[in-house]
Amino acid sequence: MNAPDYLDLVKADLAHLIHPLHHPFDHIEPLIFVEGKGAVMKDVRGQEYIDALGGLWNVSVGHGREELAQAAAEQMRTLAYCSAYAGSSNIPAIRLAARLTELAYPNLAAVFFTSGGAESNESAFKTARFYWKAQGKPEKVKIISRQQAYHGVTLQVMSATGIPAYWKMFEPRVPGFVHIQAPSPYRFEGARAGETVGQAAARELEEAILREGPETVAAFIAEPIMGAGGVIIPPDDYFPRAREICTRLQVLFIADEVITGFCRTGHWFALTHWGVEPDIMSFAKGVTSGYLPLGGIMVSAEVKEVMDSVSPENRWMHAYTYSAHPTACAVALKNLEIMEGERLWERAAKMGDRLYHGLKGLSNLRAVGDVRGGKGLMAAVELVADRGTKAPFPPEEKVGPRVRQEMIRRGVFPRLLREILLFAPPLVVTEAQVDRIVEVARHAIEAVVPGRA
Ligand SMILES: Cc1ncc(COP(=O)(O)O)c(C=O)c1O
Image (cartoon, rainbow, N blue to C red; front, side, top):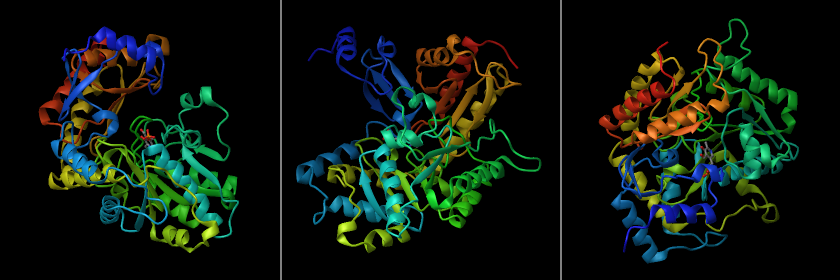
């Protein structure tokens, strides 16, 4: 078969494919990927790129893993699909659920599977409401989340997401979602004298719960390290306080570990950095390294007990056709085996340190306002027009998109949020590839905004 012609593909893409965050302007000259191996992807024109965002924060074991293809093929040959509705189950899903309860926080006792992150957070919110209704507290329905949070974009989770660009053309949002400031060491505003950013951000949580009325708040949701909002790493005193506040005010704590789960931050799950356990945890992405769509929620023994305690008419009436998909679960089991065999949490910590220290070396560039990282393989470089005031570049100058373009020209494929470059390569990335990402970022930034600080 002849290789498809690039221009024919672009024409068909523009005519027939609606992309995530769709605008035709973005797809006039797209990269059309055809192959991947480890941390490298090749496009249809034969160019190779380091995949600096590991797919979309998810291709943790790297591209081109034969073992995962085999696991999928074997399960498809045996039993590709069966429903997991009441009264039926399947072996890969049972095994995966059991394995996850061994790997995750000790208090988490049971799993409901979904097909991705948004479905997981939808399930988490509904479960929080259910938990309180089952205990005679039907008014506890509100969700508190943070500005810059990304929890997905179906209508309810879009309302929890704290990035207004995702709301603009889809308003009105679902009522009952309240946003507080993120615990951003670089941009938090309003800490009182003697108060740390972590303490002040946790105080905002307590104040929001009290303002709304604890009897109306079902849950607080937080990414342990905020991903799509710009890799915001909280100060160490934030989560222990947030956990204490939630417990004291009877608000469930949902950890959205869709990005941070499965070794990415140097632990199997990221709240381990702060010794904290959630009541409900959402996961997706890394559970299969993106090889098949799978996500889920894990709930504490206490939440599970409440779910099991209601009468059949009040059952947890929530479901997806693809919940506990046998093939996706078989791939996840193999993926976890690879992570364990290759000790990828250690690799993430080691390569994450290398990436962070390399990127820190860019701090002397005039346009670099902040470099974030150091907790596994998640890092960001925030570009600013003025390092003193932290003012962003005017959008019409397109500084971020131009830097991204310069990186792509040099063979590194990053992700961009406005003027923030985001990095989360596969956990199997090599030392040389990490160093190349850093070198290319430096050259690309200098090409667009020359000058040292
Ligand atoms: C933290 C977090 N939660 C939820 C989601 C939504 O996941 P999905 O795109 O699979 O719906 C994402 C996606 O990037 C995410 O980063």
